[in-house]
Length: 232
Image 1 (cartoon, rainbow, N blue to C red):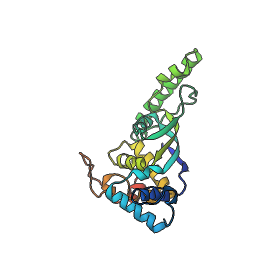
Image 2: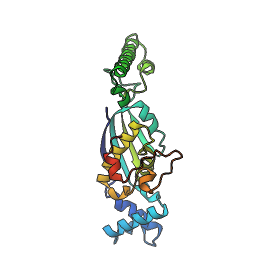
Image 3: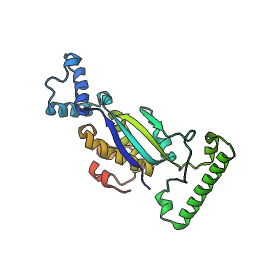
Image 4: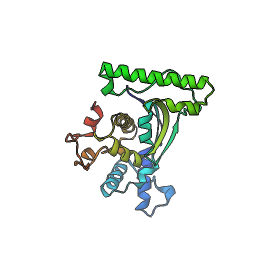
């Protein structure tokens, strides 16, 4: 099972906004005049220079908002560790959990016996949840019986700097499979929206040409394009 991701909002002319912010740092121009003479070539040069010296704060002026469905709460718990982001998540306190709906990992799905065991446990936990609610137990308490793998929906906003950091961590082969799948879909969307802000990006094997992991996977990606089409 795979989550669904949509890019529902993004800073207009994001690359130019970032370049203009960077220009202010190195120019005597007034802030209101920063767009003057800032053509496409100068934008690309500014972004290239920013990356080369590690000056990433101007990237914070561009933000991207995603609508995410079908993600497990296992993965959403990892997402909120990225503190420079905004989250609005479907509440199990107020929303009644309908039909059994848990994310089934591929390692379980490919084993019929494991799948049957997983689905039986998920169905039983949901049946217990429904009985508790019917008994008058508040949903905020009945939800305690539901598994971590229960599906959730959320809206998340990150700026371009944090997204580059997010991709560096979560697109590494050593990241958990579900959040890696989410990150891959997010990267495809922002590269379509503002490619210059995410070139290069991803794990250090792609962004820097070398692995920074203490325990390398031994299978470095050759490029962002290879990463995006990978099904690992």
